Length: 195
Image 1 (cartoon, rainbow, N blue to C red):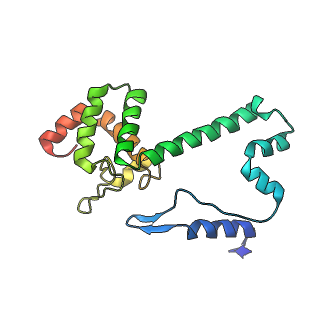
Image 2: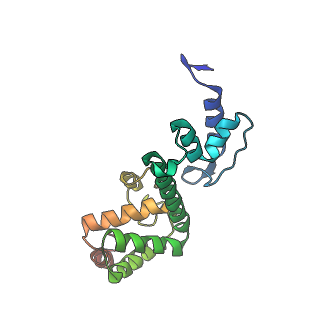
Image 3: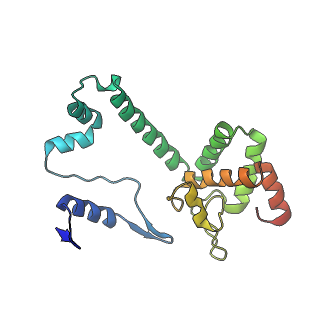
């Protein structure tokens, strides 16, 4: 197929069509389902490679003990990282899960104690009730941290509309840069009704 002088493969067109048809309309534009299952009949080697990338890499690099090689370790660690991130994002889609994820990020990555988490919990409960879909139509503030303008969360991730972990990471980053601690941000909020 040729589009504007460029030749593209039929599988690229099919993949793009499948991607676009899986989109769901929402208040913020398009949302994509978190899980999809596609069955394609065809090249058994390609299908096997998609099912087990480590075996396909072994065939590519000629290593039977691929997990013991740097390449195998890279594939294994990347898959584990993607899996852990996916679990964290899914957990944060609930209010209780978002609180747990924020507490872990706040304590493990920023070194804050439980009292700082308590202030963060109070602040974001007032702002959004920990709802990653919260949107203030009057001001345009969006997400758990109620970023204003919402687009500034893109410095952490372009998926800020639909990813609660991106919103949490941006919110904690904003608080530490502007107020130093969640308790100072909460104190400011109590005085001014914004932070």
